[in-house]
Amino acid sequence: MQPPTMSDVLEAPEPDTSEAAVPQDALVALVNRLLEEGDNGEEDEEDEEGSDNGAAEEDSPLIDAARSGRTSEVTALLAEGDAVDQTDRDGSTPLILASQEGHTETVSVLCSAGAAVDLANYGGDTALILACEEGHTETASVLVSAGATVDKSDNIGRTPLFLAIDNDHLAIAQLLISRGASRTISVLGQERTAVGRATRGGHTDLAAWLTISEHWTTPLHHLSTMDAACARAHLRDGADIHAAAVKGGPTPLSLAREIMLAAGDAATRDDGSAAALVLQAARPWSRDTHALFPAAARARAAELLITGHRLSREPRFAPGAVALFDVWVGCVMAHAVRRQEE
Image (cartoon, rainbow, N blue to C red):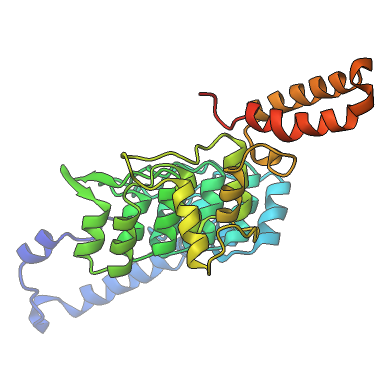
């Protein structure tokens, strides 16, 4: 039976509550009939099951465990064969629910189990969108590392970055932009910029950082928020330490120098930081810098090293074989091996 609508309520005539309106015998008979029909046990059973009374269905064990961050239970249920991308009544997957609550360990387990990181619920919210909106930085980092699309928007065009900005989550904004998030979006046909959004929201520190980092166009530009392992990986993948968005603009190398100088005249000190690694990578090739060069440069160094070794073994260089090899490695290879081919 459908509940009455507002129109039904407004148009219904006022009930006549006078005793003359309803005969006593008829009223008693009606009450008895309703009691008999409602006391047969069947409707109660249906109510308990929630099948006919419109009650919401209960969440599955995996959905409930993910929402509550019970990682061991999630692991066990997945091992038993529960579908990792099952949804609740709102279309949210276990990953979406765990991400919204910031259960990073649970999120890691679900991602490792093959959860689809870009699935959205009926409202258009992905796991990354909700993690960023709620300010769960570590969770967002796990999702991005698992392949979540940083610019996937919700139903009205808001991206994870702009939701992070709206809620003044600086660390998350830095994470997303370092992974290539766009600084502009279109919401309901209107273009919005990240710095404008932060300024209008009164988020002073966030707006200042967005302004300073406007010309940071490569991941390696984000040295101030990057750990050494990430910087090392970028350098080995061939990141250009001289990259600049505009002529005279900031480069990863210039930023590294600024960071090290700000730390206390430490531009030449190797402290293991991301900035120190960039400065080290800017030096000529050597045994110490070899691991920071791109794959092509490392391969060329290996070939030249073999060549130098063979030359030093030739009889004509026998008296000075060691000296020849040292000169080869220290001088010839230092000039012959470059980070980028010119």
